[in-house]
Image (tube, rainbow, N blue to C red; front, top):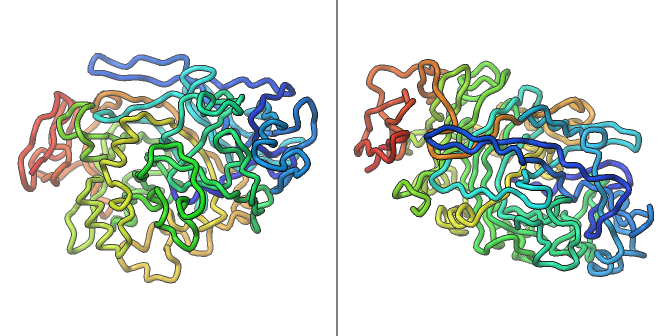
Length: 513
């Protein structure tokens, strides 16, 4: 995910993070069942639940109400250093709906952007899917697909409803760090490929040393440490634009970084992780009529996102070779859009060659390859990753990297510069928070399973792929290399433009060179 260092909690005093456990608010995780699927059908995991990230929580002195962190500054009396702060402070439970605007109905999770409460207001949130009351669910996605429904109709320019996987510890770091008494039950142990330095506790210690309060966010700041790990962005989106993006790292996460390891403002690519990733944003890739209100994927109404992780041998033991995206709306499977620029193949999925060619076309530094490429991302997926679901605004770049012209001083007709139709003046958090306080996103019907088993095609299938064309394909269309060309329930192109159609299993065949 692009900078999440601005993903911050409440706009009142009780916004902090600690490692002990308080008793003033009972911690009750909202239940969020999900499904695991095979060719035999789908089974509901009724133990699924979500937990609020610890960075949002009230943290106070042990056995007292005094804050350990107020506004965007630490309490120097109890937090003279990181270890003392961990020993002196306790993290408390959360009122999910009343304070944070987090609600669950059946298998649907709704995250509200701004929630006004008796103590002030909460801005944004991030939750993790759990397998039990004390452990995160670990997903191993090689030769699997991950599917969910989303409603982004109430997410305007400048906002991001994000669903992604981070290589966190299943217990939130409790086993590794004895000073962490809160663990996954209280949402500890976050990391991502931006190596965020706004995380208030890392490795069981406060990040208070060298803390610099934010100039634009009354609740945020940065410490001397960051927390890094492999990250797979399944879904970063609002109603205007969307992208999915792998971000590899050169170290297994979570890893506490310092100095240049963290990707500093003056050396963005000198750290251990890929901050940019290899993104596939349909608008950025040249198809401006594929995603948005009234477009091929119509963001005025709910739809399904399917992300497939294909391997070289069609098993979980194979090497990661392709990350493919499908959509389902109104009962029809919509193939992903295709790259639409001269001088580059019409890729419609993420492969090593797509990443190399698109970075070269856009004139971007290929940080994806530099930090390990697909093998690097494969390592995280094989290790197991934690599912995060969030809603946030961007104090760093105003979300222009997702939904507008970015960098703003470049020609939007230059390949890779236009990422969406939002104006370059949009996305300022003070405007977004004031004018779109009622924004929200709903994620529902989460499924994971064998490729081709988590969705159905009940009506006429087809492909996106440009210029607002209907989802029904033209006669005898062709599929690009690594694209799907057959399988049970598949109604897209069956002819390969080059290479041959190889059956990997009953549900999926693929064009291979």
